[in-house]
Image (tube, rainbow, N blue to C red; front, side):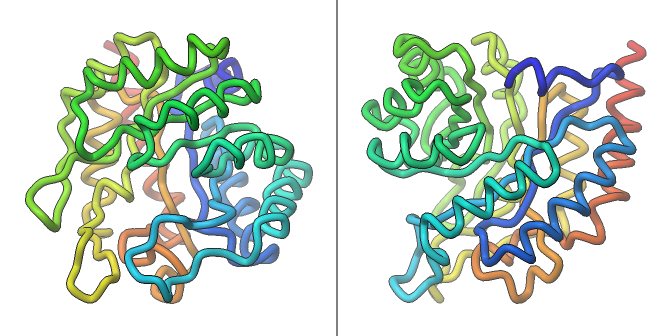
Length: 269
């Protein structure tokens, strides 16, 4: 899997992108086809992202998914239809083996990045493990999460920066953390859209600043992030999860063109 992510002959960044949660087969295939088309043109290695279930929601009445097996089968269909890897979140050690039967990359949510049993279970599936850095952790502290995966016999591991808690209702990205975590000899991904969340709103619905997506992404590419994570939807206003900070799908091509131009310029130095 790591070889695939580094397969671009032009040394471009790689991309994890898709909806926050699988809402249905048609929407997943539609987004995957759209993103495959633009990433193929720009020579960007692409991994389709979609959560089969959302376990971390502010309110008990928030949408969590269409059913585990149904959503996982849709992820597998995306993989088979477009011949691309797929990534999804897992939340417990018991879920690791189940999800690994359908996806190529297991993602550890930020709030769970210190859960030893979860990290070890994910590692032992043999799938690549992408660990999101907790909003409450320093970049240096992620060394221990990476070591847990490696000590369990799996060297296919990446780390994702997704912002650090700033007050009660905001996040901030410390770009110094990207080279710090790269010293652990892992690809470092910048989660652009989750870094722009505004959590803990009194309404119980997370807010966001999608107007700053390109700003955050440009800065991440400029400091050398290996990959980007972007949640996207045809119509974020009606998305069933995280619509407040997602990128409208039609805006993705121009954004990726700008970011590729930045990466190619940086590569000349």
